[in-house]
Structure formats: C-alpha cells, structure tokens
Length: 280
Image (cartoon, rainbow, N blue to C red; front, side, top):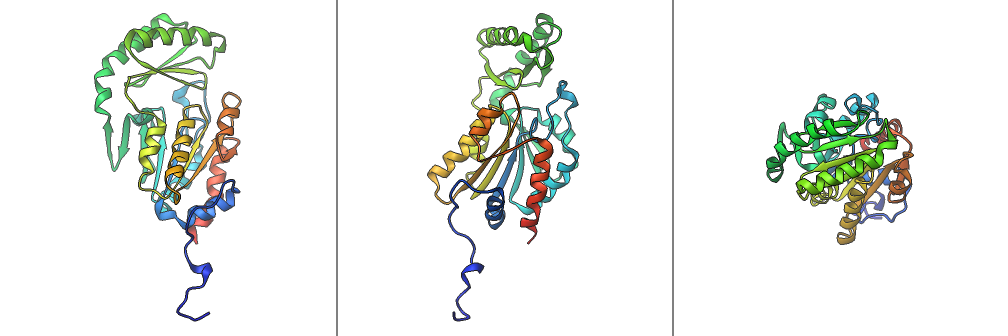
C-alpha cells in the first residue's frame, strides 16, 4: 500500500455498529467519537443507592472522580433527575464540568447558573400549599418531599399504604390540574408543564453523534425511547441504554435497555473499567 494512503485501521470509524453489542465493543466505539458523545445519568438508584429517607441519599464515593474524568474525555456529562438542582449541587459540588437537570428538566444547572422553566414558576405557591396539605392529611409514615416545583409522596417505609397515597395523589391532581409521575414507592405531583426525561434527552442529543443513558425507573424509559428515536432518524447516531436493576421496576426497565447493571456500585465500576478506552 502506498505511503500516501492511510492504513484502514488508522481511519476513524464511520457509521454506527449494530445492536446488540458487548460493553467493551460499545465503549470502544464511543471512545472513537468521544468529542461528540454525551453521557446522561439518573441519580437515585443509578449513582446513589435508594434510601428510605431521600435526604440521606449520597452518590457512591468512587463514582465522583470517574464522572469528572469522563467529563474531560467526552463532550458532555449530565445528571438528569427528579431531584431539585439545589440537592444535586450539594451532592456533586466537587464536579466542575457536569451539567445538572433537576425536576425532570424544569431546572438546569449549566456553566455556573441555574435556569428554571418559566412556565413552572407560577405553580410554586400551589406546590407549597399541597405539601402542607399532604403532611396534614396523609398517614404519618408517608414521607412528604417538597421540591418547590413538585411534591413527592414516599411510601417506601409503609408499602401497605400505596393505594391510599395513589388515591389521594390523583384526587389532588384533579383538584389542582397537576400531573402525576409514578416511581419506585413514590407518587409525585408536578405542574402541567410539558417536560420529562425523554424531552431532556431528545433535545440534548440534537448535536451529538453518540449518547448513553443510565436509568433505573419507569420515567427513564422515556429517556431510552428518546435515544431510540434519534437513532431512527439519524443513521449515524449511536445510542446505548443502560438499566440498573432493582426488585421494584427492574424487569420492565431492563427489558427496554441494551445492558443491565446490578447496582450503583456496579455503575461506578463499569465506568471505571471504561476509562482506559478514553485514555489512548
């Protein structure tokens, strides 16, 4: 072969590989597109174990350094969560290059500033009133989490009250014109604003050629669907959906994913194992 012609192995990969792939194959291809790659992560159940008290949740310690190194290797790393941005910032304050989407994207932390969806702001008083009503009317074991723009009703410590919480939540949603987001042992009420994880991911990958999403809950399936939809309209786009298994929603979420991991600790190890591909 003449010297003027590059060896085929030295040429960058073109086109996307065909699913299914092994983890090693997927990371190798992703590393070849690192500059056009975004990695998205849910928080609870993915980067942090799920806890009875939501305020006690902390990211797996080993994942912090891995996320920061990945953020320096790919175009973008983002956390997309039902938690408020203020909570996420308190858990990831050591990370300088990770974007935060709170409350399913109603709040965004990017480049040192938080932006709130204007259409949601008028609902702040209603959410504050709803949180107080929930504390007064629901049985004591129910944990009421007020998030400024949503109210989450956790029944993890009292699963026998699931129907009570769901009935009360639907009554309030109808009374106030709110929307309901189901989750792992939780019913969440939020403003009637069109915003969810699927919309966040759909918008977030418009300029990307590769993206991964790590999720564990029913709301994360919309994010998986957004990656599939992008692949359907862009033959050059490559998406990977990773589920973190759990006994509550694991089967349905895992069946929608390309790969399944066992726990947040396994996620941290999985990401650490991928780092050498980006260091070459």
